[in-house]
Length: 241
Length: 331
View (cartoon, chains in turn brown, orange):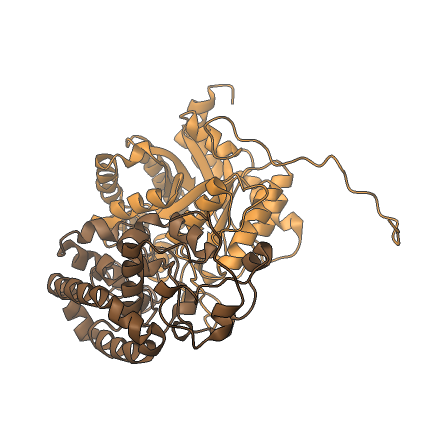
């Protein structure tokens, strides 16, 4: 809802604090989540997230939430899906070029960021393009996975293709790990489910199927035997983020 | 090797891409002009709706001996024309420096990264990364807007390709594209107070040069540049101020209300309205603006967008004196 969205941006400071708290709780719950299985949690969390964030921020469930870097204004409401600031077409009154009845999402975002502690530092960080494979999945769980994985320093399991992006957008990765995720994604989090099953060029080069499911810190995804059983150990000595 | 056709063999000694000078990002002439501290001139070409290469050269003719590089627009205003890639490839073969424009509206990351390799292989030295106007303002509003990248993630991606020699996927490039990376900025529209910050973000993303949108409001632009200098950005990026001749008060009003992101102050429209020859006045106004922006510290050149008035570009540059000064009286 447009009015609620504007309200949330005006209260960006409060919502950011709430969000930080919530994030800390979720990251702390990572061991429990791993025991239950991220695979199983994906659907209920996505449902919950869609509804709360949908109500508050008109969230579009890109799965790579960067709200605290965009003044608590969802950038996916920008008709051009811009993640890095306003385009050159903003109207003189500060409204959107494409939807003239709507305030420019980024005019709002910059206002919201100015009210947040560190808001202006964060909005200046270059965000990577959205990974469309993750659309519809829970960004909360992703943050939990990424931050917890970072704490465990268990990143060697990640897909090398994600490494280059995470390195190219290093700062964004630091402050919004879900925007450039490198940890293992459970199947349930991927909108294009079959994409995991085909052999990627990296695997072909390495002569082995990429395998992450058998790693204990990745959580019980053993109910997908083809994930865990084919390959050997993940490649060593890849670029670290 | 069996030969089924009697083709001329292709030249086996075909040139590799030019090597940039030390400290340069590309072999582009524009980069050389800017780095040696000269006031640069770029100009926008009006792309033909035609498949005839001669139409490209006809459009380029008025700019040929005055511009350091020609910008080939990428379906600007979401109107379909010959592609920037096609125009650039024709022009570079004739030795003209070009700025390939890439808008995020029409192509996704797969297409764009491939295009950049193709363009660099053909000898394009400069690439301008743009968000692009929405499809709704163009001649085919039913098209699917892509916006897979935005201008900044595009810049960062191209910088990664150039400096790290890899696609965003991590796959290595045999020869990375040596390109001078550009971005646009629109200093005269909201959010005015954050436009310089946005510029800083573009520099952080990888911009080497900036071409601004039309500047008609010199006061707003001055304030913007002040902020840019405060942030030390004028030392990090070359800024080319966007200017252009207006045809009449009527066309200025039309542009203001129909072309996204153009801010024309009322005084300018009044001045055109009062003029006996509005076309002349528009040209004079443009020359005035060039002379004014040249005096602003941190402005490294002008980008002339004379849509359908390209024939005036030569006179504008001549009368503003910018190139004569740079090249000495020998011109």
